[in-house]
Image: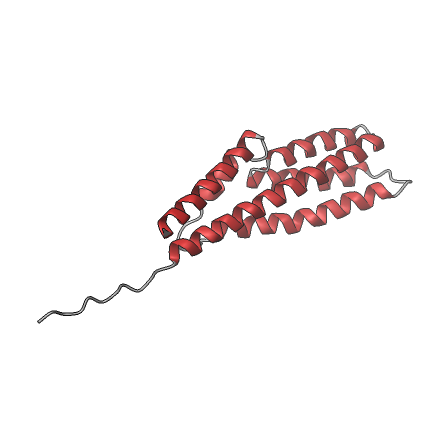
Length: 161
């Protein structure tokens, strides 16, 4: 019974990953990140992704703060934030977030405030979608690890003389 639960959870993880790859949310860089995880660092991927989330939240706040200012004109500063966001997104395989950053940067290079506002809205949407789906993936993974680690004591057979 327990083995079926572990297999079902593994299948759920694989289905979710397949969906995220099919949707273009993730790319092969995420698989490379997963290959770096081993028994000595079983939470490597989730730790790296959580650092990404923490840094991304700061970058989104900074971008939002720049665009809220009606007198905003420092598109170079925005480009620096976007380059950081693109780089970190690429490093974890967040393909759709990275692609939105590319479009956002193009709007900022053209000093297109309306385009930047639209791109920020899309970036926030894609980022939230990625974050929710990866949290879901990590929860399933933790359930699988827990289910695989549960061991029931074996019943001792009485010795017959």
